[in-house]
Image (cartoon, rainbow, N blue to C red; front, side):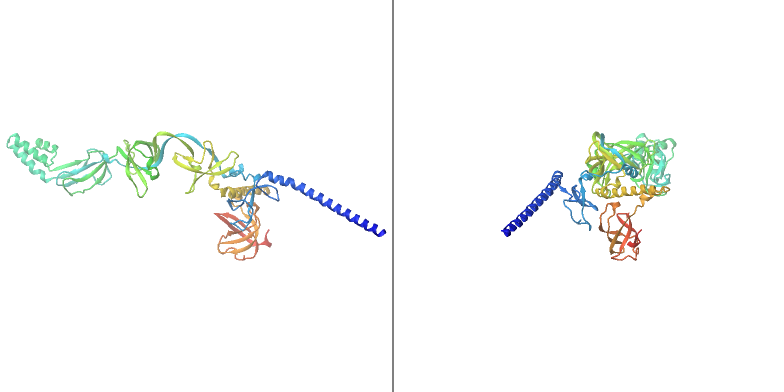
Length: 517
């Protein structure tokens, strides 16, 4: 009986322990479940990926060295020996562009301009050169066989006035008909014979002035002076003293200067926009205040195979004679009607050869690059065909520092770090005022293991570089000289200092890790 009671008591004790254990585990499970529910609800509320360690929403993962490439999950970078870094939503990664400190903007000399739409005369800029107006050129020819008795014009391109002598001709064939005429006149022959003799002299190209002088003086003339028919320049001189000339031979060519031709070189890409009648405003680089205007008279056929330009010709006034052929002119060709154009300062456009980029400031102050299609230049402004809107604010200077997303994500953070370092240095050393020099020669340091040594560089698997936002990774740095750091070998653990140089990073100091200060 007593043994049965003892067994029942032991069974009751085990049943109680089991019930207590079940109650404990049930309560613990409920507590864990209750605690986990808010975290799960938070993850569901934020949507997308959530960092399990910080609970922050992750927009994407990327390699800081290749910021343009985004990944939807963590892992190892395909570009560098490092892990991908998350970009969180609360860091402003979802906003386009980058926020730059106002002080840094002032240090970089960044200034802004507003995109405006205004009416401009359809046209384009080009270059041109002055030439002789061939329609005003006169030729001086010989109509008889003779000899150059005296040459008054000494060389080509000599200025000459209208009526000034060019050359004196000796014509032996003129002597016989003149003596015949004088004999008939002295013999009292009738007027019919005299008229026939006169006609013969005219047929032999004896000028009327020589025949009149023959009647007046009774002396035959065998010398005749050829004069300039126009004020201008002797553009061609084809004879010398004593030379024999034949009928129809050109002795000289005189080009006038009162009007000149302006030959405008129009780029092939604008050839279809050029039309006769378009207004031209030209300025000479030697005196940009003077303007010469005219209208395109004709478009010359054919594209130059060397310059790939189409030539347009117009006439400009040169009554004061200050212009000479061969002068280079800056030309603005304007259309006949005004068109509405979206314009930005020409200095705001970054042309890489493959695309044109403008740095735009968003409403929240962030900067981001925008691809644009540009048109013609209008003075100091450039027409934008697409990519911008009226009223947009663009960077008009300093954009060479932020001309790509890679610069937005890597160069500017480094510049911000350099500015911060330059500001901290004067605080630590109140007597120093060379903060700008410190920023210009900013260096960075870390510790790493040497993986490879070549004449041009060293590869380290190094620790993070907080100043640049770099995590631990393996990277190659340039050496200042092939024989630099000769004592460093593969496998050494070293402390090294580097700086940005050109398109990479250059080592300035490499020493054993134990000697790092």
